Image (cartoon, rainbow, N blue to C red; front, side, top):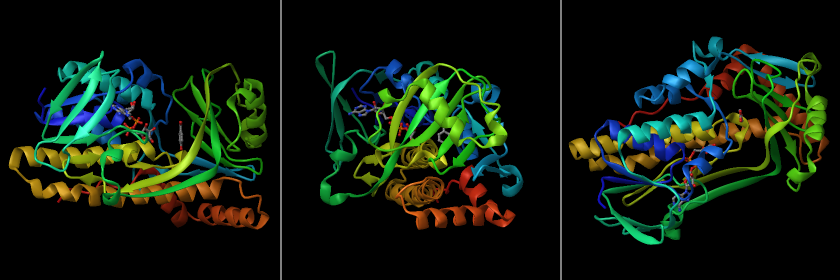
Length: 393
Ligand code: APR
Ligand code: PHB
């Protein structure tokens, strides 16, 4: 097979890139290790920055998000039982976020993929990248026991943290930065009306909690738990009881409990690989960086990478602007490090850990400092709604 861009991975990064390239008349093939249903079964975050929703519009896949997504003009932070509202819209001059699940976005992207007629291979094995530092890179993989080969001009590594793309770059050409946090998040999804319209990030002496949602009838809650906690030890009842302990008194009476649809524990990590391009391979999204979920930035950083890459590739194919290729990494990384810093800051400030009283006092003071004046809340709001995308030139 031959194509212009071979895309490894059909998560949100790969599918969105494929759609945007297709709209520019750039042919691409996506290969994905697991089945489409498996990809759709993963429960992930659901807060969409303005820049990402604009990109979805540009990609022509925003209709359902505009109809079913919820616009949120504020976010709430509770500390010591007191709830503070951050007026995102007022503090940023009109910007908001959209609450719309990653699963739904992936669904919309998969529908668009089928309509585009571009090729996608699911449930493949043994992805290998070849000659990425040469003029004629190619990708091989196995499908139904048969080895296939894709010859291409460029490869987009959209295959997540555990993917093969990043590993294909020689070790001495890439630097990895990593921090693993000493706690995890236990998440629960339920078909119950959310406890509050706005999301609430809760700092509590028993540990952080987050009240989120997928719609007016589906809730998503998280609890900070020790890293060695096992999901089997958390019955639904135990989860709801613990959540009640951590909820501010003013909202606890609104909590509606019910059977969980999904429950899982995720570790928290900050990770960046630099640079994000090597030869004709570009790393996109989780393949290059991971952030803890506290700032809701993971998916949004993936979207800004995609925006940068598709604009560069469009100029490469239409105007021969190969000089832009080496700008990809530096443009992405400036925004990535901002997202990494914000997520790390939010994580440190809102969680209870280290069993150190003085550290906790300092964290409480910092939170109080940032919540107590509009000009300080603005710093939080600007980053929560998302920094602007950088132009490619
Ligand atoms: N060959 C082909 N596909 C692969 C391979 C491989 N060797 N390895 C992994 N994949 C696939 C995975 O199965 C997965 O579907 O690549 C996809 C990567 O998708 P995600 O992990 O969702 O990463 P990405 O598309 O960058 O999504 C952005 O930001 O913080 C997160 O929740 C957020 O998942 C979201 C991500
Ligand atoms: C979620 O809804 O899953 C979610 C929302 C906000 C976050 C993290 C996760 O910061």
